[in-house]
Length: 331
Image (cartoon, rainbow, N blue to C red):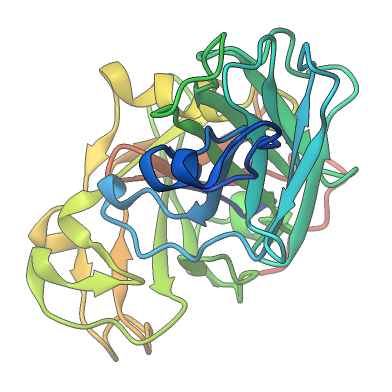
């Protein structure tokens, strides 16, 4: 049974409200009396740029460590760039056609740029794009708010993104499925959990395999019962589901979310594992009642998906090694 670990987290890139603090226009023709009674108009306004987490998810997320936001398309012809090093984006007050574009983002040590086949089209609020690291890691980025046309003094620009990080895999050997028994596997660490043990436990009357997994926290858990916390996520916030792999082992954020609209099993108090129990040093949880697709031999590829707080997902490719008459099954 091959297992690839993927984690989906939710964070946001927020550009704070515009504040007036720019350059002043020339004061040709002004007298000393004028200076005493009038204030010069301001030509430029600054956008304070912050990259911060979305606190609504219930996760303790790290802010993006690097980013680049470009000001483009302004009728004035003016351009500007903001980053984590220079966190102010200058804009001409009342300029038209301006778009603040997120062009790159570094999160959790991975740098993401727009994918060639899924870029922003309008950059208006609601427009979405896929950013990637050039490999299997992807981020879905959505424009939450954009500059007004013309630019207003109270404008806010915001981007939100969800991260999907791909990991390595494990395989259930033919000895495990040919003669049902438990099999201990050290899984690849993911941001929230690893697979510590997994088992092929039986078969239904329709030929569907029955499976179980023990999931261990990647750091020592705290609390107990449904209040047990693993990486700032309570056991009561976890759900899981096992499905037939119909996406070639790659699951998008939208696909993962859709699975739990009508399906998914919540982690119950009986499934919580305290530190040091069931072989889980850091504690975690166990799955129960996981049944794969009918005719396991003809449908050996599955995906195990864990949902956290309805916004974050961890998934594993689960591949059964099929057997034949020539298969050498260890006793």
